Structure formats: structure tokens, C-alpha cells
Image: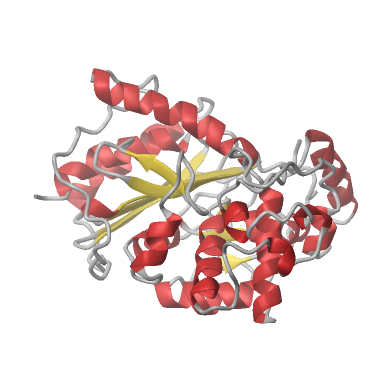
Length: 399
């Protein structure tokens, strides 16, 4: 399916890939794409400790060469899962920052570190953080049924707000046939603005009981976007900009379709959207119907800074970050839990995928480190790129 962001499969894909990475760390073997796993750190986590201001000092070019070499390797094997026609990446620490790019977008234009691309489900980290802020302000109750605020057939099972955040609401993802029908509607009018209600009208699967086993659900986050708009009385993009993006210093984040991405913007070749370029990625129809679950467009430095600011307790209070990063499996509240996968301590973040983009945010608070990778291809494996970058980064972190 051309619309499908495939992010309902992210945890399955990521779980397999992360399990492989853990095995590699234990065995000391190299991954199949040649990236050696990072050495295991002996440092302990610093959970609950607010991180210092992210640095504005650019990493010395001589030291940055090892990081740029990781990106060069990605574009040297574009047809492999770990390769891509183009890649951008960024690292934020308390001592230095770095960003780089290699290769091209789908139109053949060279990428720069500031090239904006769709980062899909990384959007969920913003939505979850905002819902927790609203709960802290007593504007909603996380343990009340979402139906108390949003009346919809998909909230009729009375799953709580918290259960929707943790993907345990029983609300299923769109079925393959649903995505097919969405594709047809988008192709007929790629420049149309979709409402959340219109997007949810294509979800034909019946909800299960609340507190169901984990099941990745984009519709749950569409509903949570509706919740934010209901209790604030403002558009989703306005709220996320004011409460989170501005506080985190994210000038180049764009919450589509309430906002347009800032140029340069990578082009894609999504056949559902057609050849017209309307300033959104991949086009306004997809950007608007997935606004709360996958609508964010940004460049890699913005995504890395967001991870540092969010999981470093710098834009959301520590007690709320603890809730975001707590779960009984590999998912907290709008946050993927990477455990010790990258060898440097407990890591948090999110994966994102659209047909022409794959992204990954990984933040390791114990090392005051945040890494973001965006590939200009869909259905790729950015965790391999992050692993390669962390291997190159570790000698630069100091004691």
C-alpha cells in the first residue's frame, strides 16, 4: 500500500532488529551490514536528573570524520535494508553537536543536514507529552475513559486515555483494505485537508476490550489528537508549537498540515500524491489525515534536539517523563523503550516510517546523548545506522 506508513509494524520490525543488535552485543560479532556493535559501557543511568543545556559547539571536523563515514557507507549500498539513496543524521550532547548528510532525495537533489523530511511516528512523542502536560494541568484524567472527552465509535469500549497512549486500548490499526481505500481517496484529491473524523471513518476493524495486549494503533493517536483539540479548544499544531516546540527550541519542526515544513524540503515519489508539489510531505491529504499519529516533518538536528530536551527532563517535568518511559514491554506512553540495546545505557525514542522516509530517534540520558537518523527511503533499517554512529561517538563522549 502506498499510503501506509507501515508504522503499525514498527514494533515488530524494531523488536526483531533490536533483538539481533542485543545478540550481536553479547557475541561481539558484527552485524550483517558490517557495522560493529558499540562496546558496552560501565556507566550507570542518570534517570531523573535533568540534563544540562544542549551544547551549541560544533564537533571538530577531524573528529566528525568517523561519523560522516557512517553516512557514506549508507549511501554506498542503497539497495540493502541498511542502505539508502540518501541519509541525514544529527547528534546532540551537552559538550558538542554534529549533523551530516549524504546522498540524494527521490528527485535526485542532494540532501543537506537541514533538509526537512517526514518523520512519521516520532510525532507520537509530542502527542503523548502534550497529553501528560494537560493531565498535570487537570484538564483531563489519564485514567478516565477517552469517551468522556471524545465521542466516537472507537472510544465506545471505554478504554482510558492512558490505555490509548500505551497502545493497549483495544482499538485496532487500519486494516490493509482500509489503507487501500484511503489510497484511492487520496489519489482523487491529494491536496485536500482531511479532518480526524474523516481519517477514522476508514478504520473498519472492531475494537477489542480495553487493557488488551499491546497492539500498535495509529487510530488511537488520531483520537488523542482530537482529545488535545477538545480540551484546549485550539488546533493541534498550535498547542504542540506553544507547549513543546517553542520550549524545546525547535524552529524547524512542522506539525502538518497546521504548519508547512521549512525549506529545503526533500521530494518524494509517492504515487498516491501524484506529481504535484504542494509544500507538504508527502502531500497535504496524507499530512492532514495522519497529523496526530505521523504528521511531523523536521530535519535531523531538530529531531535529535527534541529527544535530548524531552527525555532529559528539560521541557516536561521529570515525573511525567518517567511515565512516558515506563512500560511492561517495549512501549511506554508514546515512547519506544530500547533498554540496553545500544550498549550505553537505557535508551528511549521512536521509529517512524512513510513510503519514502524511515527515521529513528534514540536518546540515552545517562550519556547526555541524543541521535537522530532520517533515511530518504521507506522500509529501511535505521537502527543499523544509529548503531554505527554510536560506535563512532563513544570515544568522543569522554569519561
